[in-house]
Length: 280
Ligand SMILES: NC(=O)C1=CN([C@@H]2O[C@H](COP(=O)(O)OP(=O)(O)OC[C@H]3O[C@@H](n4cnc5c(N)ncnc54)[C@H](OP(=O)(O)O)[C@@H]3O)[C@@H](O)[C@H]2O)C=CC1
Ligand SMILES: Nc1nc(=O)c2c([nH]1)NC[C@@H]1CN(c3ccc(C(=O)N[C@@H](CCC(=O)O)C(=O)O)cc3)C=[N+]21
Image 1 (tube, rainbow, N blue to C red):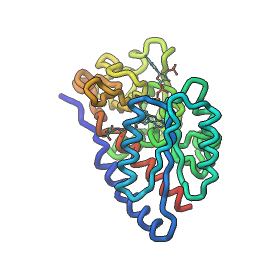
Image 2: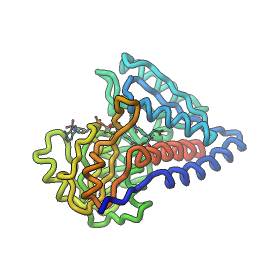
Image 3: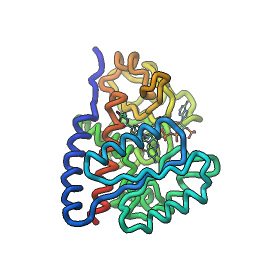
Image 4: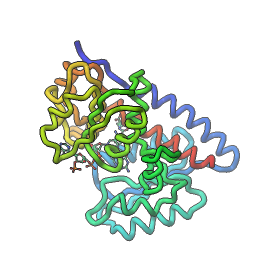
């Protein structure tokens, strides 16, 4: 038996269709939606994401400005640019890509993004409201993980979920979204002792580490659902996840692919957030 493939492509197309219609209505009303993507890294997976955002935004009728400050930008320069974009009435959404240069941290800088424009939910107000269960934009990747599971009919109530990774972009926010769906969540990281023992006790494993092939069959309980968030560039110009798909597919019940899983849903949700921000 090989695992069911949980594609994100259909869900992403449905979100994109709805977003395009909302963007067209906003443009007709004289409020064309506009997203600014601030980049200060040469990281390849961030470059994949930025290209994906720019391409999808264009198709959806959303303007997208890529503001590349270079991989040696200072925290001060990044903060200043985020403040300018926050004050610009023609910009509705702002996202700061990670990773960031040494000396610059997302948790510090995201406070310079106005709450209404924080379409990737990185700022302290967005995150605080997320934890409290109040309305705010959730980080698009975290929301994509839950959306792809729900789209495929996986009811989370009561399930044991192991999240591997505790970043502000994925691990921490997805743990809270899963908790809100009544899952029992364990968050793992680089200091977790005996990671395979923790993950193989779970009904659902969410891998968000950034290490190709880390999650092999021995990390996975037979029949479990595996969500692969990782996007690791390969030498031949492709992309692979954190999950060793060949071995895990023989043991898991279901698995999200890379590419074509969480990634496209993430991009679609970021654009949905942008039109919602513009509509306010
Ligand atoms: N598909 C999509 O939409 C998205 C994909 N990504 C991808 O997901 C991956 C993770 O991204 P991001 O969260 O930003 O990465 P970060 O580097 O910010 O965080 C990685 C996390 O993994 C943990 N970790 C590292 N090594 C191990 C290990 N051997 N065992 C257990 N945990 C470990 C780290 O632990 P510690 O905290 O202890 O250092 C850290 O919490 C990347 O490949 C990224 O490109 C990210 C966002 C969206
Ligand atoms: N603040 C912040 N938020 C992020 O969400 C964030 C970030 N920084 N830094 C970089 C990582 C990486 N990331 C990806 C998202 C989607 C694809 C994606 O769509 N990938 C396609 C493949 C590429 C394509 O076909 O277009 C797929 O998986 O099918 C890839 C990578 C988001 N990240």
